[in-house]
Length: 274
Image (cartoon, rainbow, N blue to C red; front, top):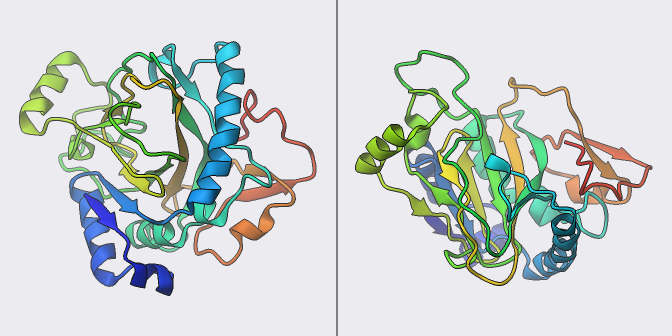
């Protein structure tokens, strides 16, 4: 489902009750939702310029990442320091409104990094980012963590928008997805593409089947990723940001799980701290 946030909601700084209800229902049933028109394009342009340059460093080093570690796919996040930290990315109130309603008070962020799909990339194996919390379930448990993806450009089928399998987060047959399992699922609900306009956020259940597919354009397609978790599923790790960007995280209902350090984090591309 795609929800376009209205000017009245932007002026109020919060989604309508109807849109929150629709977003929650979409994540619970389909496994994902897209919120449109919630991130400043000027901020995204600043991120895009820096991330394009950073991609070249990773490509030069052949630092491939993501599922299957395939050529053309990078694990790449935005710089964890000013002037590349923006409130409408790290603490977007519309995203937090949805994830708090979904996961409850105490929701926190457990990840700040991302993926880049480069031109002439390959097709990743079909996978889910995490399994169900308990084994041998007959029915899937409610969401416990979701991925928030923000791209600093339009995300289309041409530049390799992620392949998503609606409803697959409710499949309790195990994390490994073989060819027979994929074929059976295709008969139930075939995949779609996670297309999203610039300024949007894709929120998806961590258990949703997905994969990176070839980028047919001539430019890298970036995808910032955060993981919002239910409060009791606590991680011991803290996310490190360089001092000077603290204001972006203030007055948010999301626990940012953040540690602000004096040390320079210039090696964030090759030594991500998450």
